[in-house]
Length: 255
Image (cartoon, rainbow, N blue to C red; front, side):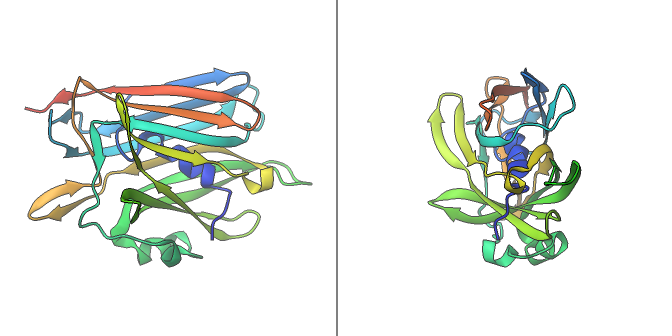
């Protein structure tokens, strides 16, 4: 089933994932809302023309200057550096049906070969008649069957409030042609906990590699062109808040 608690959290984790990463910290403050993000791509030494496997780790936080509950997310749009690629040939896939109604452990067991990343999501929830409570869930990113010829992911989380259930969030990585950017993820965010919850943190690492034809290939790949990798994102909130930002990372051509 598709839940709502962790859809926004999962989406935040994609800020530095899928195509390219960054090693720069970004912090934006508008009103009392504060959004910060960091991401790291390894290795820094990459080929100039051919893509090479990389591991990308990302942390995104949402908070406030006065300690109050953050605003509710509405939509996230991320564009990734064209000097990268997602590779899925030879990689097992997992489906929504196979992951339905599974715990974290069950999901990872059923589709172990399709796991391309793992992480953690957190939120603060204030239900009617109760005080704020902080919840968290392990996140698992699975390679899914392509959609319209585009790479696809299913992110699995498991929520416990207001009742235990699996949350499955499918995403498609869209090919675009917008100058520096060659890939895009666009995610409308539904209410969290019927409007009573707010995402506060997402952290994840993606970087699966496997053997194909005697060579090591990776899910996430990049090359160094122009001395940097770059990702641009916009995060909008239901109260009208809008956070655009760009992360860049130096890279150098491997010898």
